[in-house]
Length: 327
Image (cartoon, rainbow, N blue to C red):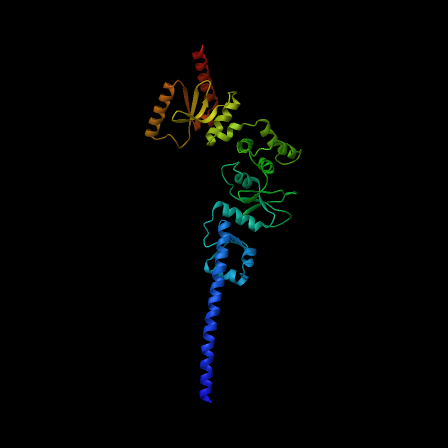
């Protein structure tokens, strides 16, 4: 009897072994498949996933919590994770905020303007427009427009350009709005009829945007620095014709050019052109341009922003010099 029990035990053990190994193989294969699915969807989303996607691929809440403890998932917002690491790209950060805001959300205001490339830098906090009274993380600036219209640009939901410009105008300076308007024009995104239809008395941003449209300066889209912006605005205030920003004269790219008058202005930023070697190159460059028949003026950041009247007087003298030489 004892022998039979031993034999039965050995047989059962022999039978359970292969079944247990097969089950383990299937579990490993399923885990590997899940890992690959999560990795693939995260790769399409700049390294970001949300709870609903993880559950769709078969991960339970318990498994998600275990992946977080193991460092496979890193919480960014409640229910939103970076996969494998936290070094998200800027686009990844925007996608994470949009996932957290939920279905129907879109980049708005300064964040939308940055994503449309109408402004140079992203705002310190991400601006999101959401439908209804949805609550969001305090790190996100939430906007709840009465009618939220959105489109997709470079794979991200964002408010349309006319709405973005109007929202930007509600909080930006007049010159910042003019710059954004010029960028929209340069990128063939400007829709004057759509903009005008949004301008209404009492609508935040309407007065500022209308003023920017009335004094539209397309050349602002061709500048490469705030100093160049400031110089164009100086020219406008003092009644000079607009120069062509950043034009090539032979092998030299000059900051501002009046082509017909053959006048060039070079602008020195606060940190540039400070070393002896840089100043020597500037002098050599100016000499060669003058030898080619151009009048060359060079102004610093300090002069443009703090002594604009003196710059205007000096520039006016250059125009007078050219006019005298032409007679």
